[in-house]
Image (cartoon, rainbow, N blue to C red):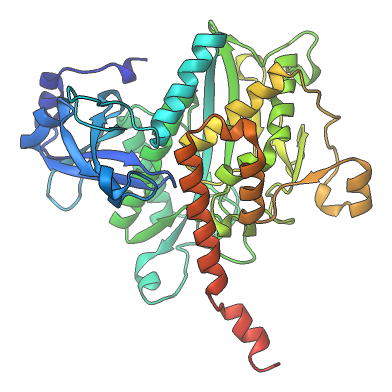
Amino acid sequence: MSENSTPTIEEIRDECESRDVRYVQLQFVDILGTPKCVEIPMGQLEKAYANEIMFDGSSIHGFARIDESDMALYPDWGSRFYESSLDGTGSVLRVLSDIYTDKQGAEGAGPYHGDPRQNLKAYLARVEREMGWEFMAGCEAEFFLFDAEDLGRGELHTHDDGGYFDVDPVDRGVLVRREITAQLHAMGLEVEALHHEVAAGQHEIDFRFSEALQTADNLMKFKSLIKSVARDYGLQATFMPKPRMGANGNGMHTHVSAWKEDVNLFRDDSSGRYGLSETALRFIAGIMEHAGAITAFANPLINSYKRLIPGYEAPTVIAYSLANRSPMIRIPKATGDSKRIEVRSPDPTANPYLLFTALLAAGIDGVQRELEIPEPVTVNVYLESEEWRRKNRIRELPGSLGEALDALETDELIRGVFSEHTITHYVDSKRAEIADYRKQVHDWEVRNYLVKY
């Protein structure tokens, strides 16, 4: 893709001058999927282009120890995008960057083994080298918009009372969606649809699928842009999976397909079941086989599991269907080269680089081991009994972050596609999060127990 080609420094400088860019943000993602950046003035552009910008890795969660803290940012200039500012301070150039152990040319400089983006890059390169496969992915990341002033007073108010696909009045939410769409187009992303979601104040903007690394990059750009534009309209955007009790949560349905020499390997128009090839069916079986471990990355917060409950269109079981939305995997009604599978369990707090790596590794394992899948689920699983689930061998998705981490720690295949550093720091961080949560006394406990007992 031309989007990934490396421009010359002269081309970058000319672009910055034409957009009145005064600062450059070198962005990266920590192990937990939190966006980070080092901001430099335009006068340091050449230093950044030469991969000489250093930062303290010991201050980033899950990165280097204090005795090996100096790390370097290697900008991927093909990922660059520009963000306008409404406060009169000029535009900002943002560039997604890889983490290296030292600046370019230094003795021992090399890719950092704890960098999630490079983990995905390395895995995709290995699969392409060994199998000739390329993976395409697309994400539908939902988000809420809350009034920022009300939040400052501790009140959780949405800007509207709309519902799914409602024809909104021209309010701030509609304006935010349109502004984001315009800026995404300016960044080269093709927006396919924008609409109100099921819950009040909930929205979705879908951009076109792409190669897996590009989609992960696009998702990070997308999330950063949404928060920035929302602030300009006095709103707080959140991708938190379940910000409100009694309402649908934020999901991130993830679509995946495998390609080889411009041929969609998931497509079989003639003899395939549901229009899917045997490769696709075994890929699904692989994801189901490793669903527990995948969930540790797909649903990384304690709050994630308050979304994965019956009654709110979120999946709860490890199964697949053609139209039913209660299982983890759905086969969309797509034809031709649009044939793909949809994994419905992830939420938008997932680190996409870790999530994609886990999904693809699981699917490939299913293909290589020739795993068979059962018949699809055709009923609403929410309404079925435990006896029915046992009879049909329906397994539940992990019901908590702790259960998902247990599954990850015992899944050698999924662990094996990440560095031990990544797995150890990820699990340790999440265990600490659970321990901290257990120490808290929540409003529900006070309301239900204080007077009664």
